[in-house]
Image (tube, rainbow over all chains, first blue to last red; front, top):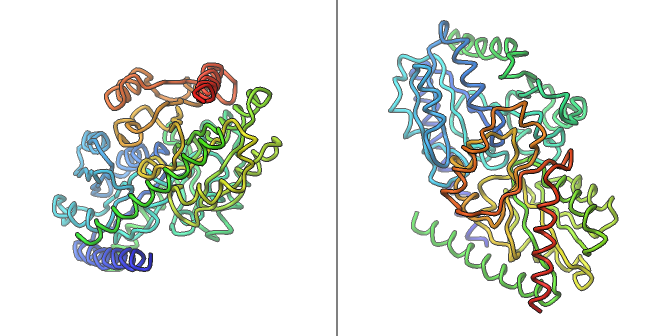
Length: 222
Length: 222
């Protein structure tokens, strides 16, 4: 077992080195990058679609879509007319820095302001693998239930912003927003929080302001 | 990298050996065991609660609850007055045969007919680790979306039955049941399928009949 642990640690530190390479490449091209993580079906692709539609006139946006299989997500994003690359992990439960590194050359980085990376739908594994992006964002959703911060603490602990999607169906589910937020606050005090509905558009403007503000602030740092 | 693969293979085959031990222990005690897998929040604990409430007068049921952290699920099940053991994986994304093996001695196996194992909420990793149970069951849910078989094929390919939970909210989500089922059929032809709502009770009876039939058939095999 000692040997197994040391191998896993080697893989993680190799991943961290490649993540640093990715960050350097993104910084060089002046591209601000976000890693979107969530359970399957929480609304990652929907939030990307909404964000692209709202900000495409002000920011040049590209997308990397991670999935075990299929090109369904990249097809949806490419239909918006922006650069999109699908990464199929071949069964792997998360994206890692190698996968992002292989995707970057397929994008016109010098012509982008914002890169959105959609991770594999998984509330556990992606938390352990840095990609080299500037901000990690978690999307929770109302139908998943209000107890998820208590059951999946590593993911909630490690992110820079939290979206709560599907608030349009709050009335149809027993979801106590205060209980949910108390669980988050213990793990990640003061975390930026965006309750919204990709379906109705409610709450989207605060999220869009945050994204655009992050990109502008990054660009101004020169 | 070769070394890494061989270590992972060793871990998996060690897991298979322990899974066989678990199966032998369950068979010896005449306990039929089900492994419930799903995305976070699809309704694993709700289905267990419904199943226990409906069948507790006819079957003696015990539960093993797997989670990264917390005892929320085992508390919910124990409140029903049946034996329940919580396994905290300490960050691991799935249960494995070692974890189930450590849980079994904490249950009165000789006094049970049915053991329900609730895996960690994850649509990828649990598919790779046998536990030694008799049947593997996947719970999908309407809010997750109808594209999940296409995006997470290994999980759909490996199970013995499929529940589609939260059909009470079909009207509130764009979920094409035919598209969903076509995706499943390609991966797992003829898979037993139970659309239901743990909230309203609709469709539950077919699931309960299946579970009870499986236990009876197992018991009759002597």
